[in-house]
Amino acid sequence: MKKRLGVWLVLLLLISIVSACGSSNSASNSGNNTGASGGDQAVDPPKKVELNLMLTGLGRFKEQFDQYLKQFAAKEKTDKGIEVSYNLELPSDANLLKTRLASGDAPDIFSFHAAFDGPTFEKGGYLPDLSNEPFASKLIDTIRNVVTINDKVIGVPMESFSWSYLYNKDIFDKYGLKAPTTLSEMKQVVETLKSNDVTPFMLAYKEESFPGWLTQLAFESVAAKQDPDWWERMNKGEASFKELKDKGMFDIIDLVNANGTKRPLEIGADDGLAKFANGEGAMLITGTWYADSILKANPNFKLGLGALPVNDDPDSTMVNLAVSTTLTVYPDSPNKAVATDFLNYILDDNDSSAFFDQLKFNKVAKNQNIETFPWTEQGNQYVESGHSYLDQSIPQSANEAIGKMSQSYFSGQITQDQLVDEIDKVWKKSIELQK
Image (cartoon, rainbow, N blue to C red):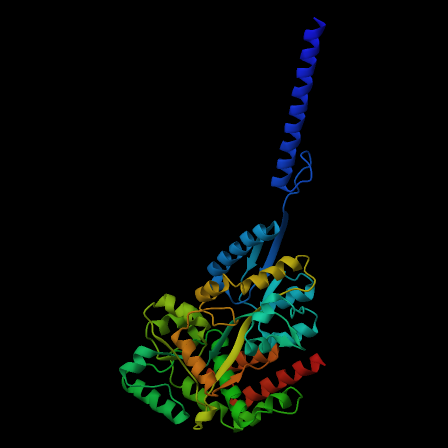
């Protein structure tokens, strides 16, 4: 009896040892799969971050940004175990961002115009130094220069382009027309179109931006060739728009305004783009940032890009080379690390090219392989032949005054002298406030 009991005790001991070993292996395997250090230790839940983005003027690209943000969230969770959600604001009023920044309620990521707002935002402490981020080394040199202030890369550029006016290639081809290189040639184009019952220019002046762009192109082209130090003198309070008026900046403005669509003050941007896409007007003073909207309205539209002549010197006929949309992260954002990850993802080696293709944006980085559109090729030809000038920094208040005064000038409420006097006054006041 004692012998049998001893055997059973030995068997029970062996069973307990085997069970203990099995339990130990199970805990070890569980720890390897979850990342926990022991079988009984709870796994930390992934970190959760909500990014707040304010991208002004990009409402037409909501679908594309939503999709890219979802791709980023999936990548961030896989790479870093962070669950990213987002709140995407797409206002049309740029003043909303300035209000948020001034009140301390800044979004984690925001868009801005590097030339117009960059210097003011940098001085106000709203822009970080992103020079050492991976995306910065990928930028094309000329584009990097546009988003560099005081030797610091202050954001990731997105919407870059050469712009002046768009034209309907089918209409031009039908009447044997080419993009004019002088003001006299433009007058001939206008007369040919009118003689064939075609409205030369689509005017959409309900908003201030379109008439403002015409004035901007006129004075910038005159200054770029005939008075290249005008900008520096103007920003020192030593120059005036009267100088550019005397050099003929209103010649092209008056030609366009006199040969456009009827009742343009009743036509908004969306209506104007749709009408242009459907052949109501051969030319439209705006940039290729509206290419997507035009092609959505008419997928068969053949879009051309021309340089607006301001006089009879072909060398003065130039496009504006600009970066209108730059994204950056607020320096004091509590989510700065994840927000910066998103900026780098914008120029991701694998996904960036497809994203920019969907937006119909031009290439900004060396790692991008983007479909080249016909209007992009035309813009590149102007740039490569020396017929371009870099977008300049205009004080925001002056930029707003240009649009408002241009609208009033078209409607006959003010004269040329009143227009230049008002812009001079606003520009000078803006400079004084920055001192």
